[in-house]
Every structure is written in structure tokens, then in C-alpha cells.
Length: 256
Image (cartoon, rainbow, N blue to C red; front, side):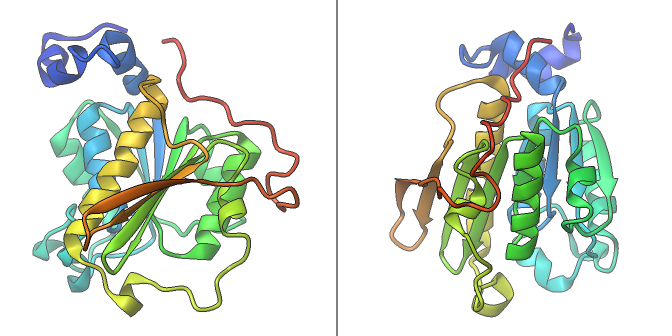
């Protein structure tokens, strides 16, 4: 896969990075990433993945744009209220980078649909705030051996983790929290979505290009009020219902 003169100019800042360079940019161009949820985390993540030159972005979200979204979901503007999020995402991301193929999937991800909607992806980025959806995504990723990047936020804090088989997200959250906090319930500062979404996009880019050390099996915790971060190990649950017998996930990095 060669680069056109326009590609060389567009991705110049990647091409001069020794950790990415031409081979890494080719891997990005050959990859497919599924983004679950075009919300606070998914919006900035999708923008940066499209700008980075990921070959195919699959945006999965059944919702329409509402006025309350605009405080943090930077893919949308006031004129988009009432329109399907994936439709707007397809337009905006294509305008940002016409070389990226955008697949719009306007449906809810459930245990019954998860395997189908992530099929063929080299990586999955989950930015939803519904634990049932998160568990369904995780189970499908473990079964398909697809790396999962998970981003979450609320109030002034957020977290990003990478799961590649074992431990999996369910080792971290084994059961659905009965009183789970959502942004609608407890609030969230809008700019935090940009921080966590960008971190999730960065971890996805690292996985695809093979750059650096992804947060595999680790969770990065960010406190926006104190401007501090810490990273903790995620311990594999020997009795995990999802990954106890699972092999490691395949790396999305591949020769192209």
C-alpha cells in the first residue's frame, strides 16, 4: 500500500515518528475499528481515529442528537438536534478525512447483536455508560479475540483500560452495579469527555501500530479536579464467566 502526495502531507507528523512511520501508517489504513457509542467518549475518539487515518471506522449508536448532548459530544452541533447520531458522524468524519470509510450502524448493541456488529474489527472502542452494553461488548470481544479499549467517565473523573482476552472487562466489573452512576444522573464536566476520548483513541492507535506499551490489563484513572492520574493492574478473576478459559486476544497489528 503506497501513499499519495496528499497522504504524505496529511500524515506527515505520523510519518516522522519512529514509533509509527510508514509501516505504522499503513497498518492504520488497513485497520477497522468499531466505536460503540457516539457519545461523550466516542465523539472525540472517532474524530481522532478518523484524523489518524484508520481505514474503516464503524460507528454503532441507535440514538438521535439531543440538546443536552452538545455540552460534551463534539461531533454534533445545534442544527443536528433530532437527527441520528451515526448519520451526522458519517458526514462529519468523512469531511474531516475523505480517505476513511465510515460505516454507520444505527442500532443498539445487545448480547444478540454484539458479535455481528463487531465482526471483522481489528479493535473495539467502547465509550458507552450502560454496564449491560459493556458486558455484551466485552463478551463478544473475548469470543472473537478482538482487543477492547474501554473508556468511562462521570462527574470529574474518568478511566481508560485495554483488555486483550484475559483479564477482561468482566474481571473488573463482574456484576451489573445495581446503582450505577450515569452522566445523566450525576453530571459530568464536558471537557473531561475530550480527555478520556482522546486517551481511548491513543490506546487504539498504539494497539494498531504496535507503538509503545498499551494499557493492556491495566486501568488508567484520571481525576480532573486534582489533575492527577494513577494506573492500577486489573487482576484476572479465576472464576470469570467470560474469560476464565479464553486465550489472549489477537493483536490488531499486522503486516500490510
